[in-house]
Amino acid sequence: MTVCVAEPVSTGGPDGEPGARCAITADGAYAARLALRGGSGCWFPERWTLDGPEPYAVPLPGNQPEEPGTGVQPMGDGRVLIHRQVAGRHVFSLLYPTGPGTGELPLGGLECPEPGTRLTLLPPAPGGVRAYALAVGPRSGAVWLVAGGTSGPQRLAEVPGRCSGGVWLDRAGRLLALDRELDGCTKTVVVDLARGGEVSPLLQITDDSDDRLLLADPDSGLLLISSDAPSPGRARLGWGVLGSALPVRFPRCLRLPDCVVTPFAVQPGQALMPEGCGVGLRIDGAFGTWVGTWRPAERRLRQLAAPEGWLAGTGVWTRDGVLRLPYVTATTPCGVSELTAPLREADPVGPTGPTGPTGEGTVRPAREGTAARASEAGGPATEAARPVPLQQAPLERLVRA
Image 1: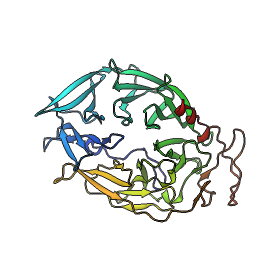
Image 2: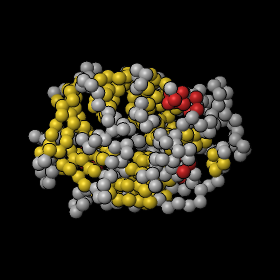
Image 3: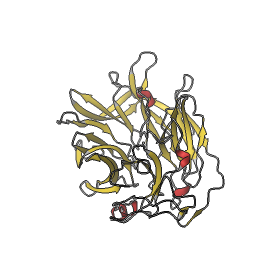
Image 4: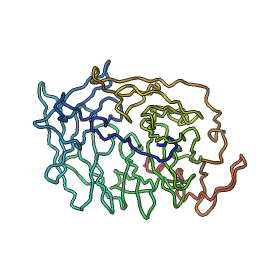
């Protein structure tokens, strides 16, 4: 994953049905989900091809129906990774079409010996060659390479604390951000998979705040975060830029009463222009689920009707600014609705970022042991210590190493 009143923040939708969940490759070429076979009530994997003239689905049924909790993820070459639980073990295979049938390449399995450990697939990695899973235990989390390795699943890193989330920060699939709960607070850390799982802090707005990373765009460095720093006890949706000295901002336009807003897609290809990136948001309220689009340079959230049968919370932006939303209806078993967010003249953006007021909803970066002072707009001084501001994370060094 985030808030419509930004409270409560959610990193995922409320859907309970497996068919409502859909994973899309980082480049938007393929998708995968569990689908129902006719009226039988049996689940089977399905791959969608999205980068052709028209989207189409390829069913990949196995020898028996799948369990509703089975995980599926598309790979960059069109195969589909499947994660099953068999007799207490987590087993992985690659599925691919073979004429009328389904081919299956076993990748091995693993066990989580510690009671209470939950293992789930991480979001599709850039490049589509490798796939990863996160084993969440009561005291630590482990990152596993489950596809693309040399000899079955490989344990790559262990992170102390209870971990959640999972956001890729670079195009090489090297830097993975996880939200870690430790000593009663949640902060985002970075796991460097090229350095033996080295863990570094990324997001820490105040000592006592819960700070989570929801989405990141490797091209522009735009980060979508959730934090209760500006409103203790109430999560707010904010944005920042990786490596920037500017404050994290919490726009008022993203606060919608009695709603939950979840960012699910960021427009790529906007290098050096994070304020111009389109952001797709899922909005859940008392009257259903709909779509929001927003850009950091604007002070307006556009709310739009979702297409019928939208696989809620899934979609992908094109570099040209088109938001593509997959959907399924009784007459269209594989469809993609394209939404072009209208452009308007952006709010003034200067060398130091948007020129709007920086009082409520803004957390100023401060040196360790100092306080963030009143903004130029005349707001009150706030004690918003940031021992690890975004610009000191130290992501810049890791990316360039």
